[in-house]
Amino acid sequence: DVKVTQSSRYLVKRTGEKVFLECVQDMDHENMFWYRQDPGLGLRLIYFSYDVKMKEKGDIPEGYSVSREKKERFSLILESASTNQTSMYLCASSLEGRGGGELFFGEGSRLTVL
Amino acid sequence: DQQVKQNSPSLSVQEGRISILNCDYTNSMFDYFLWYKKYPAEGPTFLISISSIKDKNEDGRFTVFLNKSAKHLSLHIVPSQPGDSAVYFCAGSHTGANSKLTFGKGITLSVRP
Image (cartoon, rainbow over all chains, first blue to last red; front, side, top):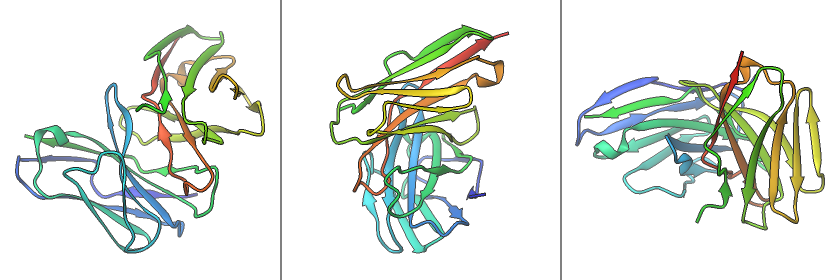
């Protein structure tokens, strides 16, 4: 079974803090994604990566950056957390060339910024 | 620009009856559609998909119908069970997008015992 593991299920941070959200997948997937889920807004894509050291902006990249130094690991970074970044963050991975694009999601990281 | 629309935010059905969840899309490039199910405090899990070369795909109690001319798809759950109570997301993608999915806002399904 594919496993996508997010390092922290719940985090509480203060405004202005730097926040790292880590994600690791164990199925050698080329593609990795970061989404955030907010009530009434669904799942919105923040950043994605097709390969090591590659990154592409999604629909809402402002205030975020990412790092992919190894194929299995994709990190989301909030350089200076703000209250409007309080959300559920979901990491996902998928195989290269899968036209269907089935994503495998982690369990999510609930971030609260005070 | 909302490319995938789930216009009904919630649906409540009686156990044993049919649940019909609707989804519309605007991007004519989409050629693959997926449904995901999400319980609170968990990540979404893949439920069922359909390619644009088909108009129906069935997997047990779950059937997805695609009407390309109307840019509309629907998920049917028969019979509905209380364990089906969750948020359901519709998503679309197109070949060459390298698995990038565009999601709708989700529908909260409640199945009453």
